[in-house]
Amino acid sequence: MRSEAVVSRAKVVRCNLVVLPSICASGRPGLRCKAGRKQTTSLQGLRPARVSFKGVSITCHVNSERSYPQVKGGRMEDIIIIGAGGFGREVWWLIEEINAYSPRWAVRGFVDDSPSLKGKHVCGVPVLGTLDVLMDKPGHAVALGVGIPGVKKTILEKLKPAGLSWPTLVSPDARMSKFVSLGAGTLITSGCILTTQVEVGAHVLLNLACTVGHDTRIMTGATLSPGVSLSGYSTVGPWSDIGTRAVTIPGITIGRAATVGAGAVVIRDVPAGATAVGNPARVIRQPEPVE
Ligand SMILES: CC(C)(COP(=O)(O)OP(=O)(O)OC[C@H]1O[C@@H](n2cnc3c(N)ncnc32)[C@H](O)[C@@H]1OP(=O)(O)O)[C@@H](O)C(=O)NCCC(=O)NCCS
Image (cartoon, rainbow, N blue to C red):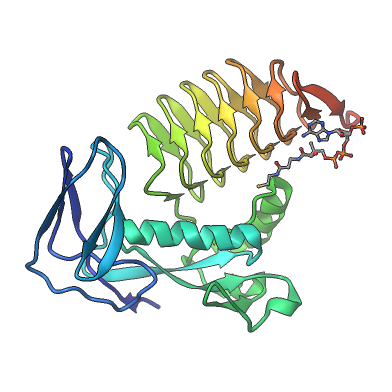
């Protein structure tokens, strides 16, 4: 199902923002601004600016390197968020931010296996039911509103037969060079910075304000909590979980499904499956090798 939507075009020309012919805020589906009006605002440096147009206030971002997807033909695509908990709601906000720049997604609802949520509304959108709701929606766009890598993996395995579409969602105020690749279903939230020759796999989460240095590889399903800083030449293994404000020195490899504690300073490689905490980070738990 597709919904009536607004048409938005925003162009950034050097440090001048030109909004034409209409621009609309997210959260107001159906709002339509009249075409043919033009407003120019000077931006200070490369900082985002708020402008008001016909009573609608929007945040505009200057980024001469990247082009943001624009809605063609005035249509938005439906999307469902998996998980209506804390992070699911943050994904809802991520989508709101994307729409504020360029209307793109119509959030149709959440799915959540918690029976108490069925029929309720979260962030103003309905909880449609459990994950099973998605099993007969091949091609439908979904976003994973869950951060714990092991839980993400279980959900993705369960939903594999459903043939869903996993768009890559990037906050308009994340910054990255054109030498960054992002996999399907990956979420880059507000304030993240990725520099050059960075490869990010599928279903990775970069939570708020992470920085990723040059020549770094982040593999499938990994989660970086808010404020994580990876120095250059880092490798983050699949399904690994890095706690808030952990940092790595250059050249570190964090193994498959490893856990790094909040605030850790990682100066040595972390083996697969291990948990490392502290400054300098030390392994406090290492699973027995499987025979
Ligand atoms: C590393 C972590 C996963 C360990 O959790 P846990 O397995 O439940 O570990 P415990 O709480 O049993 O702690 C085990 C030991 O490690 C220490 N420890 C745990 N986390 C630590 C951390 N981040 N830094 C330093 N020491 C830590 C504990 O003090 C305890 O030490 P002790 O045995 O001397 O008492 C967890 O503490 C953590 O840091 N998680 C990050 C969560 C996060 O950032 N989430 C972001 C959500 S957006």
